Image (cartoon, rainbow, N blue to C red; front, side):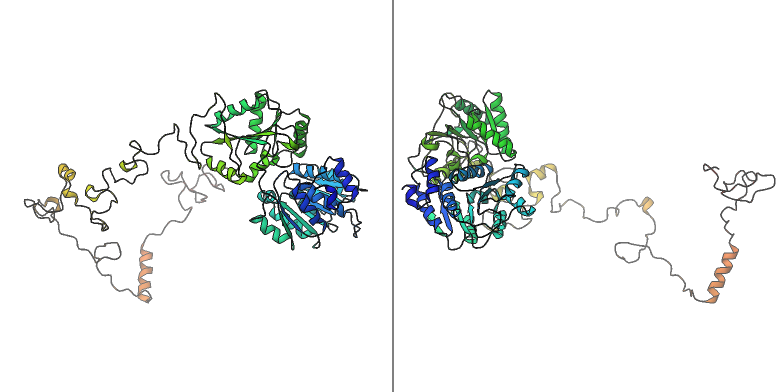
Length: 566
C-alpha cells in the first residue's frame, strides 16, 4: 500500500516521498488510519517495522489545524527509553514536518546541558521528544506547560518499564490533559505493559503485527561456544580482523566491561569506541557521529545502543555477552542489515548458557547455527539447558562416579560405614523400621574399643568393692575432727548454725543511754588536720592545712602542701 492511499495531507506526503519512502509497512498501513480517527491505540510490533512514522505522521496531521489553546507548550509529546532513540525520533519529526509552517521541535534528554533545552522551551514548540527522567526535571522546575498536549506517544514502552520508568510515566500522564490521544507502541502488550496500557488508555484499539522478525531475514545468525574469557577474547579478535568486516557493534553486559573491552581493542590496534549510559550526552553524540562517519570501526556498547542506532555501514553485530531477555537479542541484531542490506550477527555463548540460547531460539522461531573458527575450536562440549559442560570438567560424583558408594553429597554414616543401625551410623534408620529413641545406642561398656581401653562398664564387677564413702576405710588422720553442723539450705548457700541473738529494743531509752556511754568510753577520733606538726613529731604523717604548729615552727601557709606547692 502506498502512503498516498492512507489519507495523509499532500504537505506531509511530499516530505515522506522526499525522504525516499513510498510504500507503507504493515504497521503503518494499520496504525496511521486508526490514529487519524483520534482514538487511543495499542500497537505491538517488532523493531525496524517503521513504528516511528506510524505515530509521527498522524500526529503531524493534527498540527495542520490550529490549537484552541494559546499556550507555548507542546502539542505532541513523545517518550522514549534512551537518548539515542529520542534524537532519532526528533530527526524523523523534522524530516516529516519540513513542509509545516513554523514547525518547532525540542529534544529533552539527560546528559545534555539545560541551557539549550530551556531556550527551546521558552518559545512555542509543537513536538517534544524526551526521556522520562529529564522531562520530570523540567516539570519540577516548572519550565514546561502540558496544557496544550493533544497526543501522548509512548515509544518502546516495554523497554521504559524494564528501565524502571513506570512511576515517571504515570506522573507525566497525570499532568497531561484527560482528553488527549494516547498511542502506545511496544514489542509486547502483555504483563506489566498491559496493566500500564489499561491505566493510561481508554477504549483503545489493539493492533498486533508479527512479534518476531521475518524468517527470510537478511541477517545471518551464528553461534560460537566459548570455554572461558580468554577464549572469548581471542574469538573476538579473529572476527574483527575478518576482511568482510567493515563496521561492527559489540554488545557487552555492563558499562565497566564495555569500557575495558574498548580499551583492550584500542590497545590491539582497532579504531574502537564505547557507548553506555554513564557517558555524557555530548560524548555519546561524538561516539555515534564518529561511527556514522566511518572513523570508528568497532563500537562497544551496552543495551543502550540496542535501539535508536541506524547506521547503514554496520556489517557485524557481535554479542560478546548474551542478553538476558530474548527480545533484547532481536533489537541488538537489528542494528545490522539496515536499509535492505545483509548483515551478520555472531553470539558468544558459554558452556552453561545453553538455556539462554534456547530462549532466544524459542522467541525468534529460528535455530541459530553453531559455527567454529579454525584453530579456535572449544575444548569443552556444551550441554543443553545451561548445564555443566561435559568436557574436561571435574566429575561431581566420588569413587568413580558412583553416588551409591559415598560420592559427594551422599548421606553417609558418622565415621563411615554402611547406612545401617548395626554399624552405629549417626542418624541411620533402624533395621526394624521404627525410629530410634534418643540414647538408644548400645552402652559404652559393650563396645570393643572401650573394653580395650579399660573403660568402666555400667554393670558392677563381682570382685569390686561396694561403692560408698571413699574415706570410710582410710585412716582419718587430720580428718578426725568433729563434723560441722549446717543449717538447712537457703537458696544456693549453705551457712553454719549461729547462736541466737538476744532481743534488743532499739526504741527504748535504756538502749540509747547504753550506746552513748559506750561512745564516750571509746577514744575520740582525731579530726582532719589535727595531727601535730612534722617538726614536733617527725614520725607523724603529713598534715594538710593544719595551723596547730608548735613554737618555733615556720608560720603556717595556706593551701595544700606536698607536690602542689605555692
